[in-house]
Image 1 (cartoon, rainbow, N blue to C red):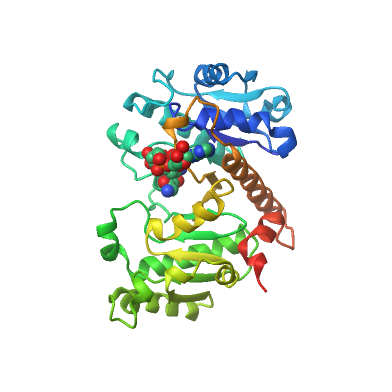
Image 2 (cartoon, rainbow, N blue to C red):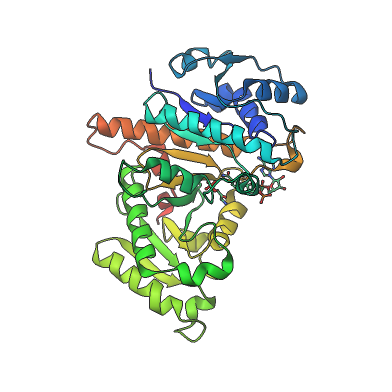
Amino acid sequence: MAAPLAVSLGDPAGIGPDITLGAWTRREQAGLPPFIVTGDPAAIAARARRLGLAVPLAETTPEEAAACFGTALPVWPAGPAFTGTPGTPDRSSAACVLASLEAALDLVASGRAAAIVTNPLAKSVMYGAGFPFPGHTEYLAAKAAAPGQPAPRPVMMIWSPALAVVPATIHIPYRDVPARLTCDLLVETGRIIARDMAHRFGVARPRLAFCGLNPHAGEDGTLGTEDEAVVRPAVAALRREGIDAAGPLPADTLFHAEARAGYDVAVGMYHDQVLIPAKTLAFHDGVNVTLGLPFIRTSPDHGTAFAIAGTGTANPSSLMAALRLARRLADAEAACKAGADRHPAGQAAAETPGAMRA
Ligand SMILES: NC(=O)C1=CN([C@@H]2O[C@H](COP(=O)(O)OP(=O)(O)OC[C@H]3O[C@@H](n4cnc5c(N)ncnc54)[C@H](O)[C@@H]3O)[C@@H](O)[C@H]2O)C=CC1
Ligand SMILES: NCC(=O)COP(=O)(O)O
């Protein structure tokens, strides 16, 4: 039987427990793949009681998870007990977040889980507790480094059937963006997208659309210099390598339906430039996928939503989409390793915006 997915609980004061319970209760009608949650079982049980959900928990192993998934939510106990309050950000939750994350990662690294699906953490809570990484993305890359080797460059992609986007710079202050945008960064990002879209998603020659940084992509250098000095040479370098890249393209006209049919992945110069269209078009279907890692990681596209934790109003759809996508990518990887001559990403490839090609 295939290894289950490992789901980290995220910040237990946020909606991670709510949407995990919500996903499990919809497992049959939604056809969800088996998963095992890492974290404090008491915190999950308490949230189920608060939400009035009759969800039996099974403290079990990944090897037993699939067998019990139909009747109980499998939990792999990890970390300290949650002592906080649902809805209240608290530094004391950071140790729970980290222990859950490490446990899920260990299951993936040892082959006992097929992929990691992370529930949201609150960055400010983690920073306040001394977490030295901007987010999961950079943490997972650091953990993926081979002994004595630098960490691989992680690339954040927000994927949905409507739109796939990558921010070239991620969690940095807006004022730092121009200085951090280099030709090398964009070329390396483009290479990773092209490779992982082909190998993981089955889109053999993805079309990458690079946004300009400035209004009208700099208007021939009259509204800012970065588009001509950085983005255009990076796109040219990628094209010389055989990668189907275009740009710099004005970002304001890149996200309407006809424009979206012209590319598979839009590469933005900063976080909000591409996450706003992605979350506007597909907030509840969007999946955050980390490219560039030696293992598969997906996540819902939203955050901890403290204000609605424990209220019963958190929508588990994005987590459910993250679970489905992780399973498809893991199955495709397993089939490739087994020597399939055709890329088996199947539905993931078919649903990728490239499928909208005219
Ligand atoms: N992958 C991760 O760990 C992520 C973590 N975050 C963290 O989450 C925290 C809160 O961030 P915000 O900007 O407030 O974004 P958020 O996504 O938590 O909330 C934004 C709005 O969407 C609503 N919302 C979010 N998820 C929902 C769901 N499943 N069902 C119904 N409504 C939902 C919230 O109630 C709120 O109104 C921050 O500390 C941030 O760092 C944000 C994004 C991803
Ligand atoms: N805005 C996306 C986001 O914050 C996700 O970050 P990460 O925790 O996946 O690195």
